Length: 43
Image (cartoon, rainbow, N blue to C red; front, side):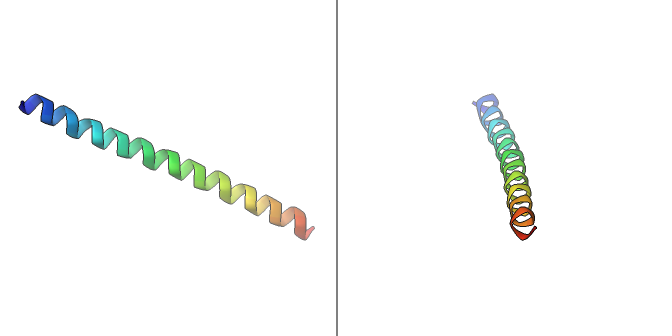
């Protein structure tokens, strides 16, 4: 039972890290696109 609990906690932590990394990369891409679009429109 304890092993299952530890495994579940590890899975949640790994999932949160993966989601955090994914959202960080996604927000960076969105920021880059909007900045390049604004630069292109301003130009």
